[in-house]
Length: 70
Image (cartoon, rainbow, N blue to C red; front, side, top):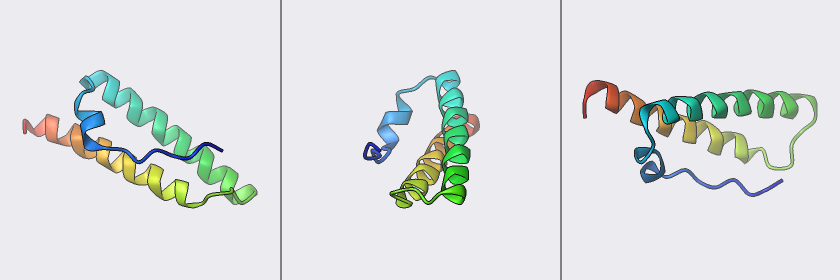
């Protein structure tokens, strides 16, 4: 499995609103699949689940900031 890249806020600030929304949906789907595969058969790097969860949180925070007008 490829090493997960840590998400940076600058990466998400450059995205359009629609692109950010679709990226969040893709990552949430990836998170569900990763959690399921980990429950069935332990994955090699369980910390990748934590990194993915945190990157989703960063994206959602950026989306919320845009909605509030900051």
